[in-house]
Length: 263
Image (tube, rainbow, N blue to C red):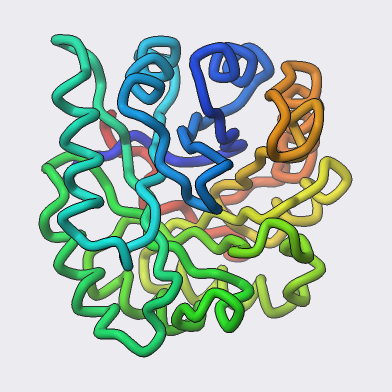
């Protein structure tokens, strides 16, 4: 299966105008979500298609599809609605993101594998591990990493569930985050880190070794519910570049499993 590379600064947007600001500011990946609907709130198909039109072939784009607890059929229906709405020749998402909140006591690994197997060819599946998994009633990150690799997911996103709670670096010690990143990469998964990461923290998070640092609140005019601003995206992109300038093909930074693959 071929995927465009997910690497660099990911900016989550809710509409086409925010997408234009993120692209102009230097984002490497555009993600579409509706933040009023939760950490992985699904946007309306019309908004997603409008973002895809802005991004076009310039960058890979992904879409949030909510929580798996809503049902595999619901997740796939959301994706299928977007694929139907795309104009002829429009590029589909590189990957979809699905969370596991509320499923700690459920057969979540089996359901995760089932969903990954049903994703259309060419669209990757990002499994989401919540750093505050106990609050989310979700499986712990190490369990998600193991299940994601078995299920054939392309990437694991380590995020925070409670967006009113502590940010990623306050919720989890950097050493523990680095261990999770190393474990995921050791089994061939790319890693994205997210969760109320501030501009001042971008460099520290990027240095943990993930392929992607994902932002929204830090690049918005008024936090998560505000509007994406080009200068803030540019500041984040510059911080990301500065933090990742050393050769990441060294033994401390093995090549991403998504790098050097044909778009």
